Image 1 (cartoon, helix red, strand yellow):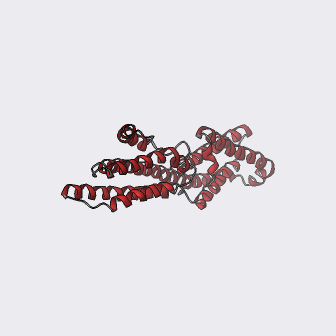
Image 2 (tube, one colour; image 1 turned 135 degrees about the vertical axis):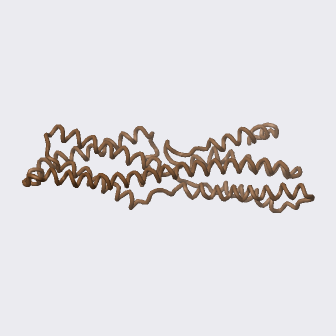
Image 3 (cartoon, one colour; image 1 turned 60 degrees about the horizontal axis):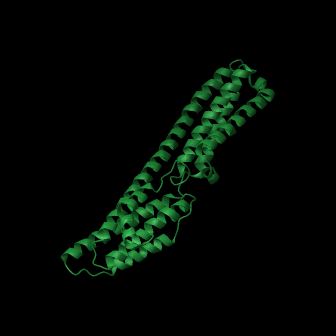
Length: 270
């Protein structure tokens, strides 16, 4: 996969894909008309046979592109849901941490504030580049060690402690799901099949016999449309890259609604 496409605005990349496919389609058409079109149409039924082949290939290729688009879109939606659940679990854990006795409650909530701010400001931008940060895991591990070392003194503390452990485990599970999706996308072999199928469909249009200007317009439109559809699938492929991606808004909402006021009261940056 060409990850560099995610470094530019989607509208620009869409134009680049459309232009590249159109140049391939129209340039190949002009070359084909000069070299092989007359040879192919020595049989008077050639147009009919090419049209039949086009309809069959177009149907199969359309199904392939449709399945890929649905898969990429569903993966993006699933990851958006996972991130929302992770942020909700983080907020619940922050609330539960406040139920521990002082000064442990302040320490636990302070660790979660630092983790959340670092996730938003540092880890998320790196994640958009395909880089997963290690030290945020260390911060959560430190938080785990603190609550695991805690010994409840009464029934109320036991309930709070059990709920905090449950939320902490849930948070770690959702976090692993998010990190595992950072560099997971459509396999390169499938992309090769898609590009090969695009070449076949455009090539079949070359084989039709018609007036030159109609032939150029028809080929150009088909090639441009295939290019923009392939771009759309690529733009949704990796859920944390590019403009069509999952952002950190859910974590920002949790921080602003639950943590920012405590950080201000404690007189700290986080």
